[in-house]
Image (tube, rainbow, N blue to C red; front, side, top):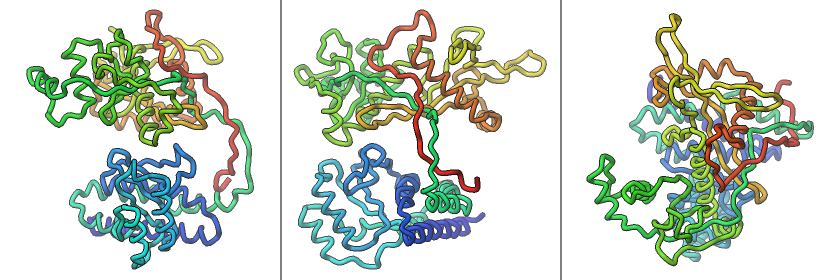
Length: 462
C-alpha cells in the first residue's frame, strides 16, 4: 500500500470513529465517550510526540481535563460536544480547579467535529483568567490529518494506521454497539484478576538534592560511562553512587529538585542521606503527599515501581528498563533455573529453561519467564497489575535473533488457564522468599491474590 493509500485509509477510519460516536450519542449511549478517551491517547502520543495518560483512571470524573502529560505540562479535555458553551465551561472549570498550577497548556479535543468558527467571547474568558487559549487549541480529527500529511517517516504512518484498524474495524464497532445496547442484561461472577494489593509505609520522605551536579558530570568523564552536561538528575545520582562508593539501591525517585524515598532520608546512617541537602528533609503521610497534586501522586507511583525493582533484585529478577519488563535471571551453571512453589499443591516451575538442538549438543536459546507491572491507586489503596510474558536469549541476558517469532509461537500455545497459573506463580514469588539466603526488603509487601465480584454483559454473539 502506497503512502497516499495509507493516508486515505486513515481518513476513512477516522470517519468511522466520528460516525460511531455521533450515532451512539444520538441514542443516549454516552459510554462510548469514555472509551474514546482511551482510544485517543495512543493516537495523540504518536502524532504529537507527547506522553498522555488518562487522569480519570486515577481520579474519577476529574474536573475540566481527561488526559494529562505531566512532564510537558499539557492537559486535554476530550468531548463529543463541540459547542462554544462547552469550551467556555471547560476553561472556567480549568481555572476554578487551579489546573494552571500544574499545566501550562489546555487543549480541547472534539471526537466528533469542531465548529468552523468559535466566538471571540470564548477566548476573552481565557484571557480574563490569564490563560493562553486560542482557536488553535481546539482540535479534532482534521488537525491530526494535517500532522499526518507532513509525516516523512512511513513507519509512523503505518503505526497510526494499525492503531485505527484495531479499534475501528467493523467487528469492534459492532461489538461495542451490542454491549452498550444490552447493558441491562448484567451477569455477576467472581473473577480473579491479575491484581495484587501493595502495602507501603505510612509515610514518605522528601529532601532537596544536595550533590554538586556539575562535579559529578565532570568526574564521569574519566570513567567508561561518561555523562552529558544535559544528563537528567536521575542519571547523575546513579553515577554518584559509583563515584562516592555508596552501595547502590533503586528505591528512590527524583522530581523537581527533590529526591523521594520510603527510606528515612533524615537518618545519617541511611546512604541516601549523603545525596540530600542538610536540613531540607520533610516527612509526609502518604495521603497528605498524594493529595498535594496529581504530579505528586504520579511521583509516588514511580517510587512504588522503583521499590518493586529493588525488592525483585533480591530475588535475582532483573529489571530491563528499555523493554520495561522484569526477567528471571539464571543463577550459576548450568543456567537452567527452577523454583519450587505452592498454590493448591507443591510444584516446581522452570523460570529459565535451556532449549537444546535435536542432537542435544548445543543450546539454541534460553526461555525465560518475564512480567510487566502497572501500579495504581483505588479508594486510598495501592495495587499492581501483573502481565506475564516470555523472553528468549542466547546467553540468559541478551535477546536472540528469533525472539519475536518465538514469543508469538509461545503465546499461541498458551490458554487462559496457563496465563492465570503464571500470575499465581509470580504472586508467590513476590510474596515469598525464593532462596534461603534472600535478604528481607522491608519497605513494601504484597497481599495474596484476591477475587472480585464483577458485573458484566455477555460477550457479543454469545
